[in-house]
Length: 468
Image (cartoon, rainbow, N blue to C red; front, side):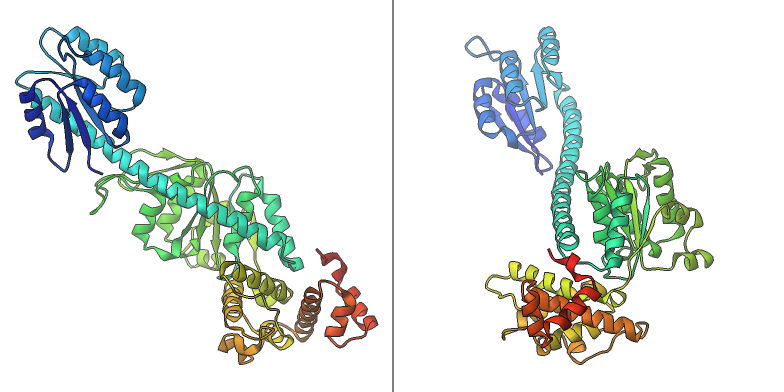
C-alpha cells in the first residue's frame, strides 16, 4: 500500500521542494497550485489519498486554506491534513487545528525536517491501515466459515435421522451451549468434533460472534504460539509488523483448539492463563491483552494417560473438563450410516451440475454397513461422494464404491454379532422406506417381505417416530 499525498500551495518552489522530499519509499505525490483544484481532485479520489498538505493562504483570488480544510473535513473527516503557514499566520494555524487539522508546519528552513516527522507518523498510520485491511479480510473469511457451520450444523443434525447416541450428544451440546464454561470434545479423527463444537457455539449467546478454529497439530510449537496469541513487531526474525492472533480474532466469540493433546506443556500454560484470567500476551509483548473468548478443546488423545506421562497439564485438564462430550466412532453407531450416506448424496448432487441423485442398491448398502470406517464420517463422506459421481446405473452399486469398501472388508472386531445384525436390519429398513417415500407397503415389497413381516420390524425398531 503506497501512500498518496496531495499537496496544495501557490508557490511552485514549495511544491517542487516538497515533492523531492516526500517522493521516496514509493510515496505518490500529487501537487496543485490552488486549494480549489486540490479539492476537486479529492472529490474524485479521496478513498485513494492518505494525507493532504495544504497552504493556509492562496491569495485574495482564491478561497483560503481554512475554507478548503472545512470542505475536506466534510468530505473525509478522518483524512490527515497538515497546514502550511507563513510567518505571522500562527493564529490561523491554531484555528485550523481546532477545525481538525492534524498538524501545522511553518514555511522556514526546517520545513523538510518537520515534514519528515509527519511522514513517519503517516507511515505508522498506514501500517495500522494495512493490518486493519488484513483483519477485515480475516473477518470476511470467518464470516464465510460461520455461515458454513450454520448450514452444516442445520443440515446434518436437524434433518438427518441420527442414532440415539448422536441425539444424546446433540442434546448435551444444546444444554451446555448457554453455560459460559470450557468444553472438552473427545473422539477419533473424522467423527465430527468440529460440528459438535459449532453446535455449542451457535446454540449459545455468542452465536453472532466469531467462531474461530485452530488445528494445533498442524503447526510447530513456535508457530502455534504466534498464530494463537499474536506477536509484536521484532518479536522474531521476519516479524516486520505487529499481528494479532486467533484469540483476538475470536474476541467475543468461541475458539476451537482442535487436537490440543498435541501441544507442549508451555503452550498449555498460556491457554490456562487465557481461561483463568481472560487475557493473553503476544509473543514479544510486554503487556497483556484482555480477551473474552469461550474455549472448546478437542482431541483424540487419551489425556489422562498424557497427564500421567507428563505431556499434558493436570490443571488445564481440570479446567477443560467442566463438560466432556465423547463422540463414538462410526463403527459403534452403524444405524447412522444409511441416513448420512443419503444426505451426502444429496449434498454432492447440489454441488455438481447435472449429477443425478441415485439410491444405494441393497448390496452397496450392505457393504457400507459392514465396513469398519477407520476414517469415520469424513471417510464415509468421501466414499459416498465418489460413488455418486462414478455411478452410471439406476442405483449406486458396489463397483462404484472405493476398493477398500467394495472388496468386502468386515466390520470392526469390537462389534458383536447382535449389534451388527441390528445395524444391518435398521439400514435396510430405513433405505427401503426412504426410497418408497415412507410408504410401508412399497418398502415391504422392495425387500420381498409381507406387509405383516415389515410391520413387525417397523415396530421393533420404533421407526414410526423417525418419519419426517
